[in-house]
Amino acid sequence: MAKIQMTTPLVEMDGDEMTRILWKMIKDELLLPFIDLKTEYYDLGLEYRDKTDDQVTIDAAEANKKYGVSVKCATITPNPARVEEYGLKKMYKSPNGTIRAILDGTVFRTPILVKGIDPCVRNWKKPITIARHAYGDVYKNTEMKIPGPGEAKLVFDGKDGSHMEKTIFDFEEPGIIQGIHNRDASIESFARSCFTYALAEKKDLWFATKDTISKTYDRDFKEIFEKVYEEYKDRFEEAGITYFYTLIDDAVARIVRSEGGMIWACKNYDGDVFSDMISTAFGSLAMMTSVLISPDGKYEYEAAHGTVQKHYYKYLKGEETSTNSVATIFAWTGALRKRGELDGNKELMDFADKLEKATIDTIEGGTMTGDLVRMTTLPNPKKVDSLGFIQAIRANLEKSL
Ligand code: NAP
Ligand code: MG
Image 1 (tube, rainbow, N blue to C red):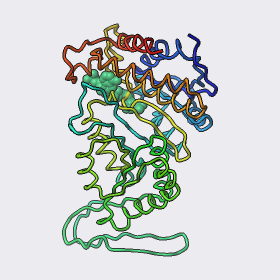
Image 2: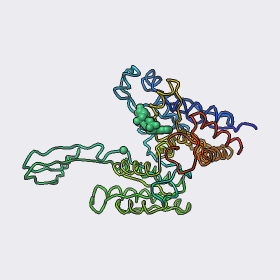
Image 3: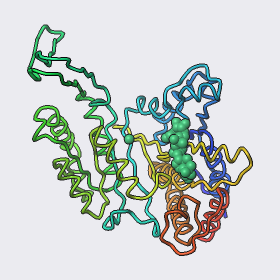
Image 4: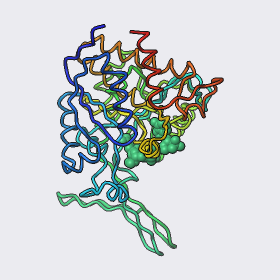
């Protein structure tokens, strides 16, 4: 069979540890035999990041801007232990943080559903995607412990000489205060990324705040979303999808009772909390995909999990590993499908569909990695090692091509 051709390269960002090992296996077994794979390769492995003083991360993000679609392997975010382990010149920032800042994007996380790995919530039949606003609020706060009686105020001194102030509370005893902020431009980018993604995925978009209580702060979020929605309204109607706004507590109740299938846009703190709830309730971080989308429609696909360090150390000792490659495979299929869509390359899109189906069929057929064996409701699951799993997928894939 002739290999599938590509017209535009994917931006390929390699990474670290066990996921770097899986990355090569996936390319060798599932991609290179079938696709004349065109990529522009950036090595975001920690050693090369150190060698280039992290310039490679910036270059990769710029390439993502240029070409529009990238696929990224999990990478180490350096901490003091990693600085020592790798003898780093300095404690570089998180590559994901750097890329997100350059693309000004929002991260969307979606679980991959398979029969036999059942969500804790019985009525969830379709994946729920969480989009978390990754700027401001309590994550960039200023806090104070109030030692005793006194007046706490909120003060704004404008560059134009204007002045506003409000009393927060008249303390008669010790207490605490906190100042938080957000920027309209950041909220607007977030809204635009969410509407863009909902259209691309043809899924309803939900957003919720507590604007009945937070009549200025949360209302600003609500109003900016409403304003941006006006730009998308016609396209939403055409696509047969809806934008739904409600209060956060109502949203939580409705989500739990729903069958899933929506994109749920969350303020920063809500996204922090509910993304952990959703990923745990759907089963496993190893089955969660993640895509970063900029407001102007640039896409970066990756797995939601990290570099699986513990498995890598076993691998280095020559011990058997059974690391789940599903989320990384779906990062590739997501990127290939999007590339295919942008280039009008139907063959590439079909291939992505077939590879995803082969992956799901493998698990549903009872062959899976150790993490899933521990969770599955399927009888007599067969545990395979990291490469064995990928080869089992290849066997299924070959049958469908
Ligand atoms: P992790 O790599 O997500 O792994 C934590 C544990 O979760 C593993 O030890 C393993 O549990 C299980 N696990 C995660 N993914 C798995 C998979 N694909 N297959 C099977 N089991 C899986 O998190 P971490 O160990 O806390 O972080 C390691 C490194 O990843 C850190 O340096 C961190 O900076 C980086 N990180 C990167 C990203 C990213 O690039 N997007 C995200 C998060 C973390 P068992 O050991 O019980 O099998
Ligand atoms: Mg969290």
